Image 1: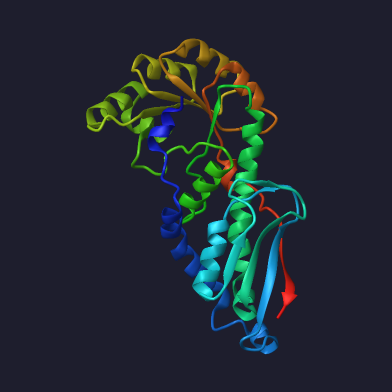
Image 2: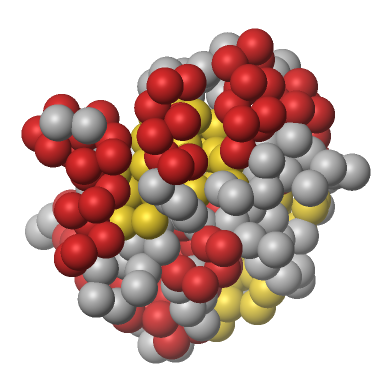
Length: 293
């Protein structure tokens, strides 16, 4: 049903590697610098070890490929064996993966691997929480562009892993007329007409509306999607009544777990939340050595 499926990104292992590896290299350089002096002092060269990553709370696993890439980058002799798949819901003490190989290299990559895993799993977990609240409705959960600079692809991957749907990846894959565009164009109507004349590839056109009058203009100009920005439930109902079946509606702004069900009951097609990516708490994991060799 989602018109946003037309702009969904490819989330393959190869694409993950392409997007994540430069970030992993940057993170490792930032953390290791001239070398892990503590591990060099304590761990003998050639010392082998095995460790286990476990969940310390209920969470949604996301970022297993990042773990593999971190340790592959440090030492090709490290083996990572995953016990679960991306998107699996784990309970406290459930095992995620084992890591086996040179102990010094494992210690050097521990924090970087956990940082990626915790961050992406936190986003996937928050997304799953919202998606579950929407079960039994036709409303679809979307993310936004409110992402960590440089991490957008990974964070949208985490949203997808948690069961959400991606809004546009950037400024290039659909038209989204926002309040500042409307101010510069002079009106919603004129902004849509300017976009229509520019839209040679017939991309989707969405309009952000802050009042019912703006909704009426967007409806009259046949916008594909109308974003209802920071509207209370009363105005959302009015917009739903006006739009009928001509336009799809997206609620955005002030989206909380306590409010999301009410918005879905009104019949809004999409709910977008920046909090999925900018406010998700990190998931809690531990990495502990299980055997010494």
